[in-house]
Amino acid sequence: MENEYFASINEVSKRLSVPAHTLRYWEKQFPVAIKPTTGAGGRRYYRTETVARLVVIKDLLYKHGMTIAGVKKLLRDGKLPENADELLGAMPAVHSASVPTVPQNTTDIDLAIKLLESAKQLLQ
Image 1 (cartoon, rainbow, N blue to C red):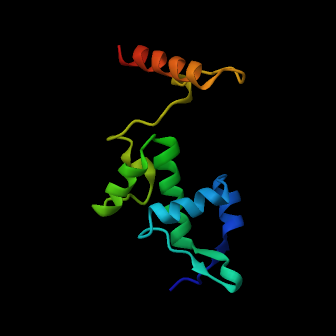
Image 2: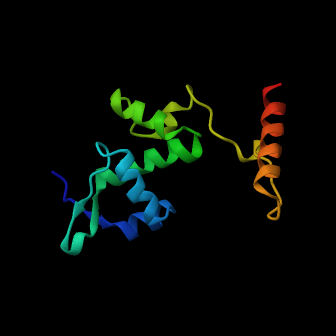
């Protein structure tokens, strides 16, 4: 057995470029896949294999545009890949070129309209 390494939530947060509160949220959403060990004072420590699963989950959600429900279904069906790119044939990645840039001062409604118009153009 490999020498096991435990990473703190802060280390994992930095490595994945995801806020710590997002990791805690994912723990609640994917309790079967993400089970950190708790240390003194309730601090979370992640095993190497848990960090690997977090990388896959992050890629599925952010890079491939999958929903939380979709990832839950993969977990439930036992089909969570070891590498999110294994799903490329079945699911295209979200390309930044297809997502419009929106000025910072736009309202939420204007943003929603612009995104819907872009989606309509992509589907035509």
